[in-house]
Picture 1 (cartoon, rainbow, N blue to C red):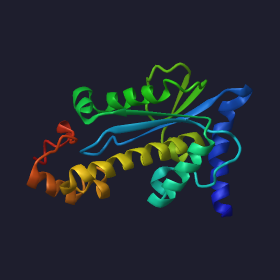
Picture 2 (picture 1 turned 180 degrees about the vertical axis):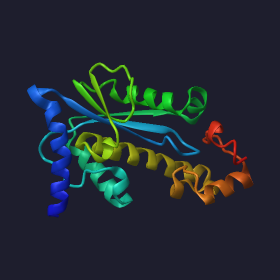
Picture 3 (picture 1 turned 90 degrees about the horizontal axis):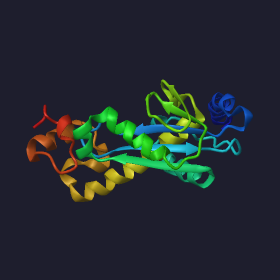
Picture 4 (picture 1 turned 180 degrees about the horizontal axis):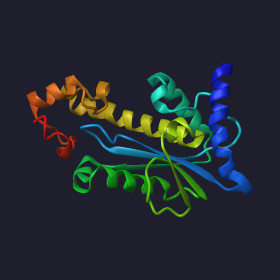
Length: 203
């Protein structure tokens, strides 16, 4: 467990300089830019300096069961959590980058932060300093927490959609272009939650 504690402390240490002078720091991340189906979901999270939750890390580095547990810990300790979501239809209309920016603005709209640490995305026009960080979910404690909240939120939505459209395997692939998913697209055609602009090569 010492390794986990060190990792979490390193992530928190990255954030601390941005909190100098009592500034409120939020982390922001998105999930779902690449899938063929489902929404893009973003989270904006303000975490306290204590306690440092030792399993907070890039959501991709955690198992699904671990993410679920850490998600609950984050919600129990976070000072603020905002969620933003843009539908497949709107992704088709405005493109995935603009949809991601819109979802991030939605997530941040009620979060009173002075500094927003953002995983790579720029030019959001938020009411605070924006700091885009490449691979931020593996660098910043706040962004890592946001990555977990966004990931679990979206995964739960895709599992729910699986019951409506079971032929595509959304509970397993979460809308990503796995072989199973692409084969189902070719066999059944798209369903209402597919992104038409993403599936032109498969149908």
